Amino acid sequence: MSRSGSSRTAGAEPLWTRDFVLAAVTTLFMAMVFYLLMTTLALYAVERFAASDSAAGLAASMFVVGATAGRLFAGNLVELVGRRRILLVCLGVFVVSSLSYFLATTLTLLLVVRFVHGVAFGIGTTAVVTIAQSIIPPLRRGEGTGFFGMSTTLGTALGPFLGLLIVDRSGYTALFAASVVASAAALAVALFLRVPEPVLAGEHRAALRRFRPADLLDRRVLPLAAFMLVMGAGFSGVLTFLSTYTEQLGLPAAASLFFLVYAGVLFVSRFVVGRLQDVRGDNLVMYPAIVSFVLGLVVLAVATGVAAIVLAGALMGLGFGTLMSAGQAIAVARVAPHRMGLAVSTYFFMVDIGTGLGPVALGWLVQGTSFRTMYLAMAGVVLLAAGLYHLVHGRSRRGQRPRTA
Image 1 (cartoon, helix red, strand yellow):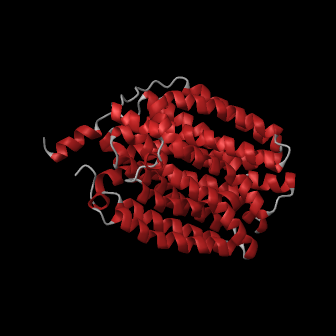
Image 2: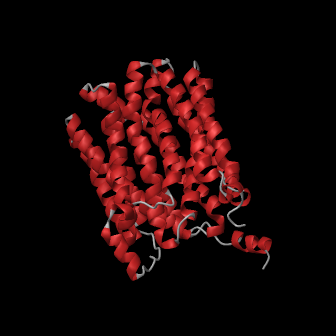
Image 3: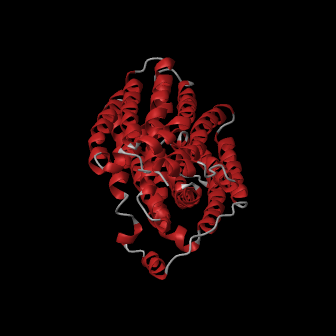
């Protein structure tokens, strides 16, 4: 069969199957919980416990620190225990963790709850993303990953918007109640998932059971994941401090608008970007996305009105949002099917390190300078990271040409 005929056959493979949709809905509810709390916990720590800027950043990012710790073992656990089984266990912990915010009466207890909640999120999302990637037809990897990422995109829009709205109108008790409801919904939907588990060869199972440092992360994915660590650190400054920044500018409603526009632009781009990546190669998507991310950070740094905040949201939707899904498709394409869970956990492990440590470091930078300086500094770092992407993937044949070639 010719290459073009093969591509047409691959393109005809079904993408929107029952379990693909269920996995996406589960991810949506989990993402909503993440964004509900990530965009409000720094302010909560300040108002409830009189925390400093750096401590407030830690209260927000401790969730990601927990997720990072969980992902270190997630790849092995997902394949050893079973993808569906480990997902259901983690979602059970997710519900209990959401309930525990009501009992966190000190900053220390809040940090503990955030950490445990993050561990459950890290392992659980690794499981559900691995399930989705195992369902996506290999030659529609970019397209399928992009469409699956819409669930996170919707969570990106609804989570911050609802979180800030709930806190403004009803307070933090209602916010934590909403987190419990969304967590329970994720568990309820996941119960209906029916996905065949891969059969592991004896040597593969033995390697997973060792839990050696060399076996916890996939070396073929690590270079690209290191690039995404920098991207995650850059976006963490938006997630954690945007609401405080817009309040300082006298534009408190602009933060919600930012995330709505971010998600809307990203949603629309999914219909083009993933297919473009499959057909024309990774670089045609990745390099423009890096530039768009840089421009978004610069616009945010110089913003004086709502229009600039909205424009920054659009640019970052095309930028960081695209990088997340396109990078994930690249990472999974590098490994064999039985190592898919390990590839996913490696990728998100590095993203989480950037997202988790970013708010702490950026909180110190803000204390010594300003929010504007911080966003400009991150724009410079992200621009320099384009060179890292070129070294680890962009200059390769796979980056320049279609994966179906």
